[in-house]
Image (cartoon, rainbow, N blue to C red; front, side, top):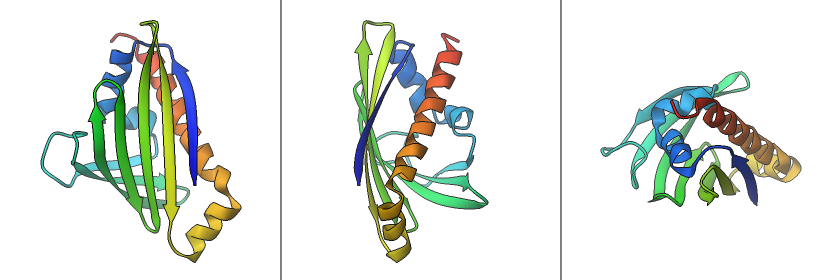
Length: 149
């Protein structure tokens, strides 16, 4: 399953990227994030680094392995996210719009394994997209509130 989402953030691209790439900001726009722990050596959010994330989803905690695959500053940031029976590739592109705002384009690809996850992705494909829209809107609100702090 693949989809693309776009939104505009009313902040300059450099500021958006600064906020997006700093792992200390994740809890500020991902309130379900329980922990963010490096698994591999290297600077956080650099190509090749792996991070173990735990998110509270519904009544349970889900462990996700993030692997950074592309950090082409200032244009692209890509990562894979692996959890039980789910693999997700996310490509984030940040387009400068007149120096004062940023267009965020997110391409996502999901691959599911196992009967339960395949059935859920077939019956409820909008669930994945809806969750991504929620994360994007939260980041937009956080970035626009942050201003030029």
